[in-house]
Image (cartoon, rainbow, N blue to C red; front, side, top):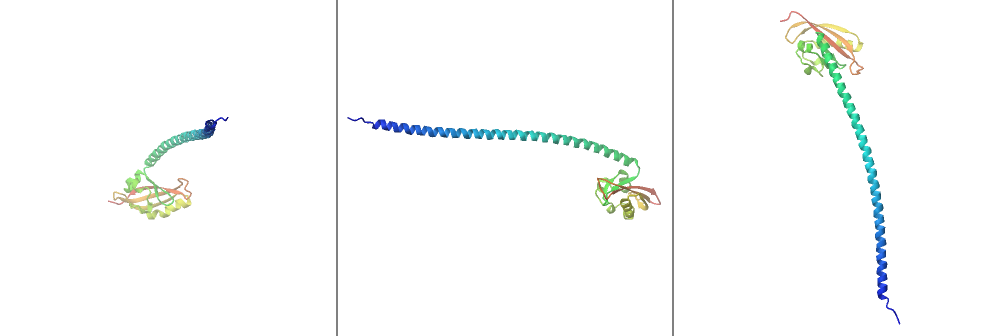
Length: 199
């Protein structure tokens, strides 16, 4: 007698294959789970970095706002100082010109405008010796250099003609000064024209 186990054997083989496939699926699920955990950790790390960056950006923004406020206050202070300077220059009653060491015009007050007929915007940044005014500027070169180099007051009187064509004697006082940390020095010119025999 014999027992036909062919179908039983086939079922056993099928069961083994299914068990093997389940094991493989389980391993894949474990691997996927580990990958998801790793991804989650990376996302948490990235989130922490973003939070840190956000805090740094907020801190930087606060610093920039503080700097901006300081600059705004300094701007207001500078406007006040400029207004005071303009008032002082206006009350002197004389033409006032400030030159740097290269004899470039840095300040040209209202009296200088009225005397020589050149607006401050036109004179600013220009070479004083190159200005086309009724003052023999070349004759002032030695006086200006003496004030800059010797750091002493220097004076000179020259014949000049104002913007209205009126001639006279222009008394020029050169005073040494230093602006913006310019070691070479600058010079302040005070000019006053006394009437002469002009038209």
